Length: 294
Image (cartoon, rainbow, N blue to C red; front, side, top):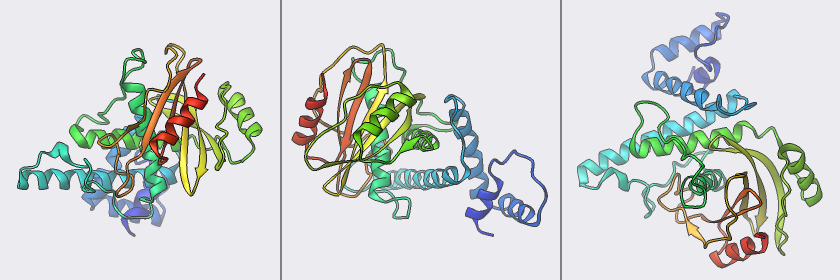
């Protein structure tokens, strides 16, 4: 039995199970594998974070995939720290441009997968920085007492991404703007104007979680690329126009695809924080944002 199968059979680790031959074999593997023991120890941190979000389920399949991605991130961070010590490069420089922090090549490392993580990172920056939202607490970078520095940041981004995926049972796949508007109103009480631009195809809307706040993300396809429009309720925030396009290079999971940096623009309208995140040219991204802002 390999690590992946053993982990999937025994999550959550502290739940009682019948001692079937498969479970016995999985336990024997786990108890003799230091990597698997460390892997399962991280699961408690995910569950603690999920408890903050009412109604968020903990599906085993996505949890295994996210935790395995987390293990890859941790290995890259530790490798970067080792290389920094040998070459004199500070560990904080890990993942900062130049392609040195590119994600591992795997089925979980596709550009769209990393784009999703980068989008979440952008909204985390939107909610935790800048003078427009002083009442919104910054996301907790430390997942466990042992986490610190770039490793803690990588873990925090993955936890937020997992939270988003954990509630993806609440979604709608349609190109009909009316259906998406009804979905947003029904699920979240959000009344939002959808993007209407030539060449921009509405693809999907889903409930998301950003720093413990339930919101929505509407996904568009543009010339084979993906544009994310996040809408996060923030009743205390003052209205604010789009304030320019920024790159999240150097932010959480900024190396979502080799050689590219996602851009985002944010604004506040009618008690809702908005963020557009994508690979569009900056002038196009700003133009779309200005057309959406009141």
